[in-house]
Length: 492
Ligand code: HEM
Image (cartoon, rainbow, N blue to C red):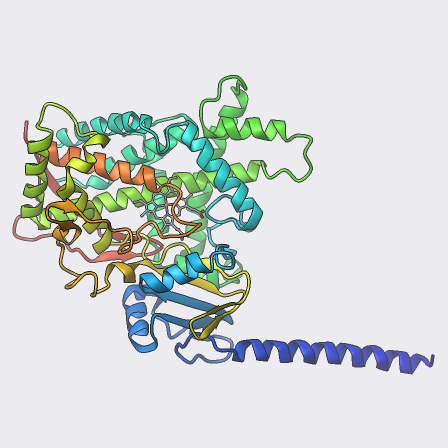
């Protein structure tokens, strides 16, 4: 063949392929995405969406465009599902297509390792391994109660030592709560005065409450820009310190491993790693272990601590509710023993208070984002492959049909003739579907035992009776209260 003909044939082939891809892309983007604000080329809606105030921004967009709306950030389609029914449709009915995670979810996890950040077979294998292993060490079992109660005792002693002077409850709570997951995962608990632990817990709090964190998902070039745009480098530095701490703990375990005596999650993982030595492509790698531990440490500490901080804040705002809890505890348990998990069904008012706290301040308001693996047809729309889905859990809690006057703190919403109503279909603080929180049962036991023991033993008062701390929070990946102080008056 004439060499020129050959070149032209190749060029024509390339042009046809290029035009076909372009046509396909245009066809895809024209299909009916859920409605949303009109964006501009390249940026999409990046400069229009108020990322620093997403609670109100999503409320406004829902009022304008409906329960499922969309927008784009640098070409990335984002779908926001509002209200229980829409979230159920996407996370449960369409679970086969919407149970993955987007890349760049965590600060420093380019290969999407761990459980919370992973997808597909890796996620399935390690979620199941994680649950099974944590159960061996108490998770979801009666024995976890003893571990939690030991931490509650130290926590109450810390509070007692404040001698009725104002204090910030965050540090006491964070140290006690993190010790529970640390015992199961690393077989280790820390003194509440351990400065390194307290610093790392502060780092986690700083990272999760940073409203710029969402940029990690959408802005791929942040690492290449000079300075510290949107605090990206500060967040990375903090997580690097958390990893260094966990690496030391893994090394300690490796050096003292006894295959006949598993102490915790790390030992169980290392034994599996040894068994898999000959297995090609085993997923039991050092990096997978490290990322899973980072997730356990973060998810197992911060969310429960934040919920309990909100609880104490609302209880100093509502002394009548605090008195109602105390009366129920005094009537059912008295003061001679600590509350335990078998008391739960006998304390419907206390349970209702916990539900109301989780409702009025949903601590993970937009859940953890999901990634769409295949096109999904939902209502009249197409949720396209490659989109990121935010389940707006906060919208479920603020639903005026289920919760009239939703900004009012009122635990009686969860009571019917003095009994606890099922909240299953109404609030979803742990999300729903296959990716729902792995630590839900542990978190519920912690919330119950910490809060009832605290109210049994102390009366909580504001630092200044005339100026109550604000119930407005700080929104990042979590929604947490601004720092505040309380006083605790001993009842014994
Ligand atoms: C009040 C406390 C807690 C709240 C409100 C909470 C909330 C959540 C939410 C909303 C998700 C995302 C679910 C989704 O993607 O749809 C999640 C995931 C997760 N949570 Fe929690 N959580 C809490 C406590 C805990 C604890 C104590 C642990 C202990 C290990 C934990 C471990 C995890 C893990 C590993 C995931 C990822 C699950 C997956 O991707 O398969 N959480 N949590």
